[in-house]
Image (cartoon, rainbow, N blue to C red):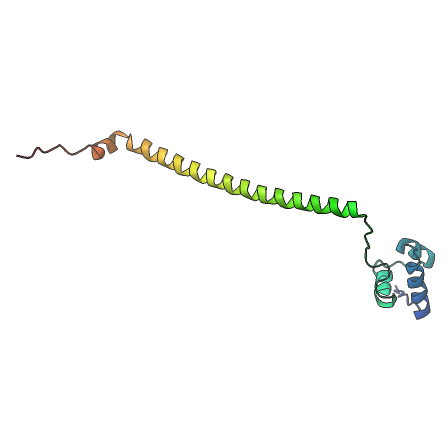
Length: 128
């Protein structure tokens, strides 16, 4: 059994990257040139492409859109802060509930007949 390793020429690699930069998809390039490896073309793009071309996203927005985004980001921040406060309040109330339930158990234990004798007040002694 022999394993065939494909070797691509420098010119072919550059041609593929050039076509990618003009807008051809990686899937189409793989079909066109019969390239089977998944990371092959992205590796060539990283190596041979012009810096910054088709690598970043540029957002073009109107002033109204920018203002709306700022308002929404402010609302998100306010909601996150409110959620944080509510979470702290919930934890505080759960802690209080645990303490109260713990006190209730102490009271129930003290209502037990054997513990009543230890809770009796000592007899009052009148001064002479």
